[in-house]
Structures are given as C-alpha cells and as structure tokens.
Length: 254
Image (cartoon, rainbow, N blue to C red; front, side):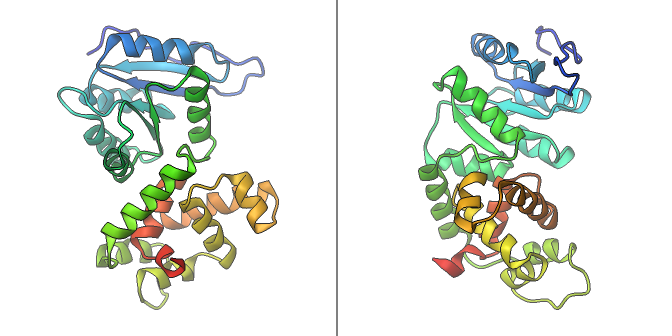
C-alpha cells in the first residue's frame, strides 16, 4: 500500500455542502504530489486517498467510496484500464477520469471501453485539470469535439452489427415491449427528444450546446441526460454514447 496519508472528509466547505471525494491512482510519487497540489486547494474537492498501482486503486475504492478516480493508464501490478473495469463492475457509480501522456485514439478507445468517463493529458494545466474533474462530476463531457468525433468514428467502424447481449441488456429495462433491433429497443424506451439529445451527447456537445441546438432550457437538457443515463443502465454520458453507438442508433444519421 502507498505511504501517502488517507484523509476521511478532513475538509468541509464554507456552506457545509458535501465535498467531492477524489482518489489519485498514479505510480509516480512526483506526479501524485503534483496532482494533489493542484486539487487540494479547491474548496469543493477533497483528495481522499492515493494509490500507487491499479490493484491498490481498486482496494481503496472499496473502502473510501470516492466520487471520482484520477487514473493513470500504465501502472505496475494492474494497469489503469484493468483497474477501471474492476472499479466500474463493483462500483458503477464511481466515475473514472484517465490522466495520461497518450493522446492516440487507440488509448482513448480502450479507456472509454473500460468504463472511463473522461480522458485528460498529464501536460494539462492545473485549471484544465480542475475543469475536467468538475465536468465529470457535473455530468459534462471532458473530450473536446475533435476527440469525440474520432472516438465516434472508431467505435462505429469497429462495432458493426448489434449483439444479442446488448439487446438483452437494454430489454431488461423495458420488459413486456416487442423485441427488435438494438436501435428499435432504444427508440422504444427513450422519447424522441431524449434520442435527439443522446445523438448530440455522442458527438461531444456540452449541455449548453445541446440546449442551443434543441432550443430548450439548460435545466431540460440536464433532465434529459439524467433520464438517458438511467434508462440505458449506464453510469455517465460517455458510456451512454458508447451504448448508443453499439446499438446502432447513431448509424441512422451517418
């Protein structure tokens, strides 16, 4: 286990609201220290613990129950992708933000498929890191539009036809309805407005951009996003996008 101290809600905000608990998973002590320094001064965030490998990150997640894990990809014992899968299987409510040196689409694709909600480079500034953390916690996208489009293209190209497993998984949220293609199942459980919002989510649009495109209020967009995530049985908007692509929903408009 890491020698770094583990804090249990040591900080409280001025208005007594609950702080977002973060776990840093990084094998480099220097990078962990840098990340902790960038995050610790924020009044709305608390660094609750640190892990120096993926296995330790999984173990600490069980005991600390963080809201978000900042996860390195390359680590000893268990890498960040494996650790992310394990965390999302055991604690789907925990968000994972990948913090890495790699920007290649292959790494992005692997991270998202592992269950990551976001992806940020280690070279990012303190403000960019804080913005990414808050966007994930607030249900906003952390991928810029160009990266989101590259991910969309790669996922669509590699997914092909829908699988029976995906159809079964979605149908569990919609028992008693007629069976059909994955797209038909999703269409039957999402409203027309929710499908429009999902398509915009999948191409990296922010809530504000979605509100402008659909000419609705920002609060309505947030409600749609929450409903989409719940109905698809996923943990965040990134995984909702992946599910939409896997089920062929977006291929209808390409």
